[in-house]
Image (tube, rainbow, N blue to C red):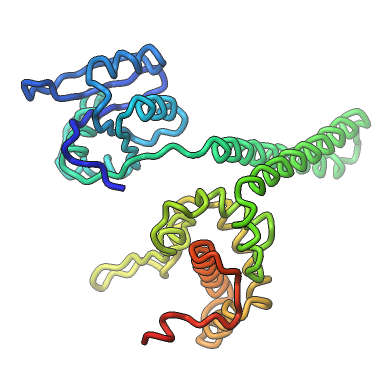
Length: 330
């Protein structure tokens, strides 16, 4: 949703310890303020600028989330920009030099000149689920590291029994922790998205875990307008790089974001190309045209996302012979 332009704009450059703020005073003069990135600093910011503003900031991970939640609770509008977007905006205006104050001013100018979308906080259960997902990732990385160390130790001509025992115990503990966290994550997701998971599991090729993780990744698909947005979020949109006679490589997917769900969908594509009628037809058609098998599987991933989006939006389970609107209205 695009924020109304009538609101006064406040640019905020967020760092770990401080907030550089740029806002327009009643006399139209730009003013700068620096406060701490803490509850006290948030209060000073609202006192100086007011709560009924459009606060524009970069999405900087964990450093700006507490501020965004606070401003939203105070009744303000929050816009979080991709850092690459504001960087290109600054470059377009041939800015010289860089500082926190200047960055805050550029954020204010962007909010005044460009339409921006409102940021909305996620549900508490989704925040908790994403934290569990992050913990699972970290545990899996540790498990892989310990597994590799164990394999390397077992190839040594002389093996310490103590070292071998400790690594085996650590690997077992990590395996148990991964399983426990994954089960807790799936339980929370099924409590929140029970009907939606059942709908997605009706699609041949998509299982319970992938359905749950897809809904977590896309926030239940409630804020998306079409399946193309979902495909772009998963980094599965094709990207071409050509200009005139210059063609740099083949057309590839963007791989911008969604690495985990992209990996799960790719594994699902092997099953979908055999059991899902539409995916099977798509895969066979592309292979018959001479396309690489991996390229055809990526197309199957996109098809699965298209089916998932349509099924969640319609509330109708998968039907192999479901008539397409495109076919009915050529």
